[in-house]
Length: 148
Image (cartoon, rainbow, N blue to C red):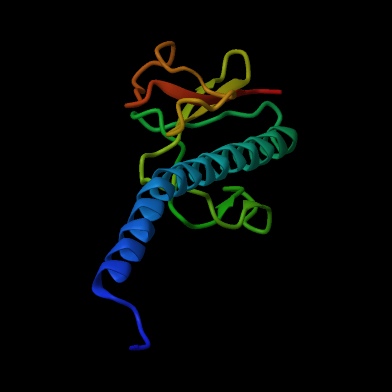
């Protein structure tokens, strides 16, 4: 009597492991999408807080946007132009996928809109992106923040 596994037993075990791996892979990918969406939401909340502090420091504030309606993500500090000792954000966050965050200021009403594309279409915080000018998402699901 030999001790060990037959070729058939090994193939069955490898097949079972393969099926389990194939079933768990989509779940793992969805978890990564949810994690990136959580990061986007957190980034927008931090930018919103910095904009509110900026608004308090400037009377009246003037929000600036580039021609593409994106929040300036230089990866550097976002500081007061007149007083460099006032830093609103040490590092301006950027979207994990590299797509810039949407930013539309309205200086007449002193409001702004921030938005990010969400990957997870089932996210309950997702909203329709079609109302945002010059901004589109492949999933057509956005996380949108306005002045609180």
